[in-house]
Image (cartoon, rainbow, N blue to C red; front, top):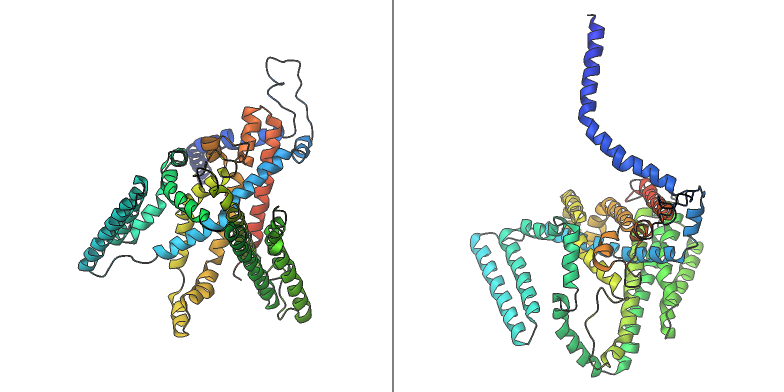
Length: 500
């Protein structure tokens, strides 16, 4: 046999062997990924409704409807409502990222002492402190759950002190080891009326009731409300001023200036829509005056250094998103402070929340659960890896220059972590757009009154509860378009315009 023919036969056998090993994976991809995707894309252009197109109604004809399913989505008020729910839940993303960064900063430090005697002393001190605190709480009439939670906290502190930072890292990462449905069922029990969370909050809320009843209502309705509104206005003012200063210094481009300004304007405009008091217009007035003043200064002074219009877009986008969330938190606290006197005036006083059954509490409940899971997630590991790769000579140079801890973080740590932060932010946004189905299905069934129905759960209800598979496929591919747009944002700005 000629050598060339033998080589071809041997190569063909090797290729066939490789394909045989890959066949299960390829067939699985075709059967469970590619074909369903193509089928759903075809469905998105049809009027398939299982109520009318099934074996019991042979006369019904499946029709091609073009883009009717897509145009019908934007005429459906439920779509925008559930899209708003999705965006609402996504406002926890900056808080989760900040929590992951804070946990990483703490977990890169060694928590053990320098000798066994020091370890033993610290552990004994921790045990005695936790025991004394638990006895004090029990003597002051605290609930048993409060005492137990304090004991668990003391156990974590002592365990981390004795076992080192690896114990803390393991404890923080535990939520990622557990199955999602099991965690959701656990939190549903925690949120129940007689659950540990409400048992722990009962006594503090009764004490707060006494404080509010013994204080003039004006302190909360005007004083505390004005305080939180002033903080919201301060956050908006500081970030707007910082964005214009970065633009004038050539650190950010024109497009990178106006995109976060749009995000910052959202809570300022929304604050003016709250009814009840003219004071809620204050953040909007501060934003408008700051914007006009900064534009006037920028036009007069101009940019000190010419730069591309998209430079610094990643950092500016993250800063705008964080400002949006912080402003909304302050506005929410202002509204809560304004309503405290009315809640305390009830016969039962300030009651524990109906976490999953109350329209106003259902979404915050899911956000709290999401924050608990996200702080110790893979984001924390990414930040730990990034922190360990920062050159130590940068910190040594900062120490020689007399930089404070905050200056070290702001001028060294944060810029070095900017690419990681932008990657985490983009991936969190993609996950937020796609998420919300599992907790809604397990804990609230999308209620109460649709307050926890997200786009992913809306696709499920459209397809598998009402049987409108054509419409459900249209919503699914609309969601895909949103995720694709965010992915393109990451592709354009992820490496070129972050920390450049």
